[in-house]
Length: 279
Image 1 (cartoon, rainbow, N blue to C red):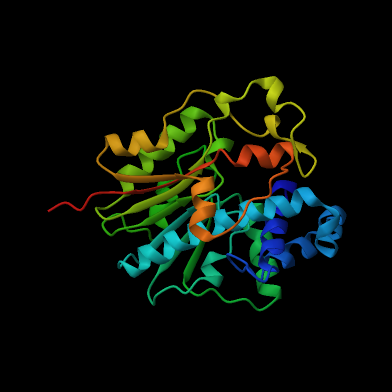
Image 2: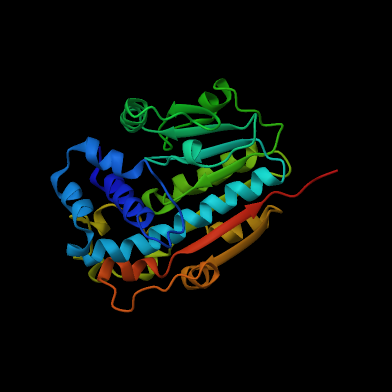
């Protein structure tokens, strides 16, 4: 299991343990424990020893709550089909209150899905929706496999691309948008987050690490479409907020003295786009 995915799970676990948690993921710590990763398990045993991880948990709490609320709003509006792209160790299919009949498709690499499913099964976790895990590489054409798994392009879908876009080359991101648009019935939605890494020089990104991995070696800062503008140009109704606005919305104070990695997270934008209803 990749260290970045475990780092995200660890941040979710730290946030979940707060008395004022913005979200609660009871499974996050189970993934860290099952991984056997010594540093991650030391982190959860004593989070205070890692101020950077505690800082990061604030951002993860805000991000997770944003996407949680997106799905809950979509299902309250009658949507019964969700697709989580590059789902990683996401457990929303298990921890959110999905209406009866909701289908949740999770797409990710086969080893990620296998690890997650084994840990959850070992602890007797049962999904709260009709969860369908699909092994897929988003750099390839994943749409046929999604349709084969029972995805219905004639009904509204709640799409989510959380913490994903910066890990894709620009051309792959734009192709992802085209496929989402093509498969979306009227009334569908997309929630995603993104930051303009092109605004950072290579020197500025040098030496910024997340759980021991240098950030500039993971992310793409090449030319790509602005997600907000791309969907708006195709008739989707868009609403974007920056992280400080999200912190105000949820009443979470962001620490003032951020390390270099967490400082970059202040520039992330959170976007919800909704395809128009057509007569």
